[in-house]
Amino acid sequence: MTDATPDDTRIPVILDVDTGVDDAWALMLAARSPRLDLRAVTCVSGNVGVDQVVANTAYVLDVAGAPEVPVGRGATRPLLTPPHHATEIHGPDGLGGFSRPSDRRIEKLHATDLLRRELMAAIGNGETITLVPLGPQTNIALLLRSHPEVAPGIERIVFMGGSASVGNVTALAEFNVYADPEATAIVLAAADELDIPVTMYGLDVFLDVEVGTADGARLAASHDSAAQLAGRLIEFSLGVFGGDACTIGDAGAVCAVIDPGGIGTGRYPVRVETGAGATRGQTVVDRRRWVGDAPVRSHRDGTATDVALTVDADRYRALWLSAFTG
Image (cartoon, rainbow, N blue to C red; front, side, top):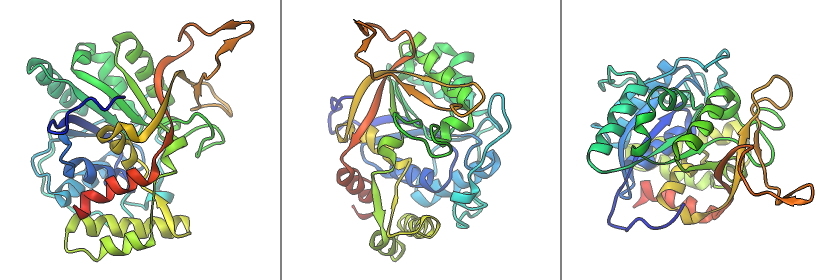
């Protein structure tokens, strides 16, 4: 990723979410950033079931002051396996008990059709849109295989998922990829075939950008409804994990779109383990320079991906907080 976008140009984005706590933080940043033009949000089963994801997404966008952003309901389950949720981290409703009803109209189009509509419109207008998947990539896999004609409308895919080191659900697999490894494998393969650039914002940087007890208290005491929700979710997460700091998680991937200079990346082949056993869901990041006695000269065993390996945590913390403090 580069810093080539002028400061006065808003970056068109679509977020694909499984709205739990950190997706909510990501949505509020995307909706409020003066650098982003949030064109749509699509929902997928992940942290909670897809109907709860839709409800959470609608509520968060309402609170963030984004009434016109279309929301689409997507895949109800992974491509091949039963759903895998994370209510032990995000609470039974996915939002730490803070979700509320919304009267927002949800698009009748399936998420993949909403994505296609927005991307084809962008092509017609001579634009491109950055896709930001923050959950299992089921919707994106279905889109790229069903509608490859949208590829010219995609500037880049910046996904939160995977790891070049350790996992969280298992020793090797990160949740979003583990929840539907076939989908991530398809997205990477399709991106390679369709010449779509990909950035992986994985656990190597995901855990480093933190906010703390004082941030939560200050935001929760704000008169701004989005700041209040953000602060209460910080306090909830601190209660789940203990300690005096928690990661902003998925919101960091949105920071990486706004300010790509805040991450250090390496370009490596990435593939996903889809078999059964201890390695299922692992993102295999091939960082070798040599194979045997010859240098690695191709990306045949994976999709060439810009893998985030380092992050300026203070820079992204400040960027995220700016959505609520100006």
